[in-house]
Image 1 (cartoon, rainbow, N blue to C red):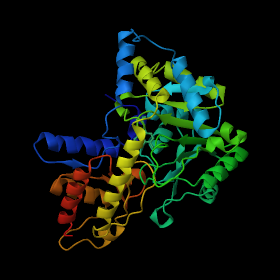
Image 2: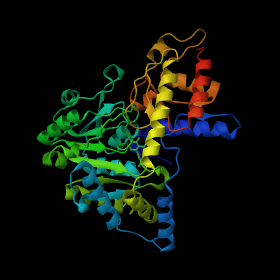
Image 3: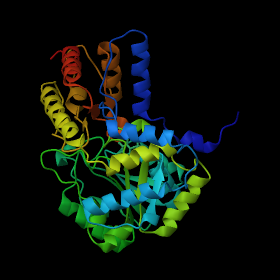
Image 4: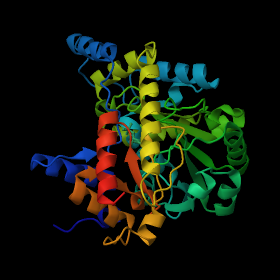
Length: 396
Ligand SMILES: Cc1ncc(COP(=O)(O)O)c(C=O)c1O
């Protein structure tokens, strides 16, 4: 078959590719420890599962409105108001099959050919591909370890041209766990509003912050900032619900909400009906499982940072959010232990997987080839065992 040109624009997700390889090795009987996964290892809270079972029993198994059941859209808007002090209309809430679909539809709805979108790096792997698929041009702005991944307004200003249509903000961030300072968020939000630039704020890790870090949405900076901001969020990470596929976007621009709904109506229609009721229960619940999950992540983070700092040529900052460490391995690539040679982070990750059965993700997919990403959404035993194997393989 002759395939459409757009299929050649796509790079397969490197995290998913690595996950597939690790699972293949496991099937072949190898002992594999994966630091590749981007999902909590906790189970979905029991009351959420019960709500899904109740929805099934009540026959909530039919099509719903494309933008989601009214109760869920209301709960999403109410929650954002409660937590960020900013009100979005329920008509500006569109429920999607995960945050990923919300982002996909946003780029499709906002971009014309050649429109530029500023993407700070390291970035979540999916943004550039979704932008390119929509005909846009990702403008990557790297901010690395030397600046503790601290994006500033000056970085965005320097990358802005007359074609800049949008900026993607992701705080807390995947992969480095950086959390933007609240005053920087306000500066960026005011600037975007004044320049007529859309701020796409991916807040899926908003609840996973440590050491007293504060997650501030740019939408909360001012009424103008709220109008410039489109918030993207999901139950995926917060409630250990990655497989349920419920996310959403919030916008005050009802024309945009309606365009996104139209796109969705001609592609996937409503998000899964039963999962919507489960998400409703999650949002209306008391978040009882959350503090324990955050405490566990913080302890695992401390352990992982401590062990990574003992590895030769690994430099790592303490992440303040999400559940990943993103060490720079430049020194290791430049002067590897005797007898070893890696010409890239990709080669290092391939060597470690083959040699030790430990899966880590090369930084190239996140726009930073001299780094690697390790998820600490796994047990302390696995972290200890995995990093002990890595240390041995690197002669530490
Ligand atoms: C920054 C970021 N945004 C969005 C998503 C996608 O979330 P969902 O599973 O709700 O589509 C992920 C998942 O890894 C992510 O890391």
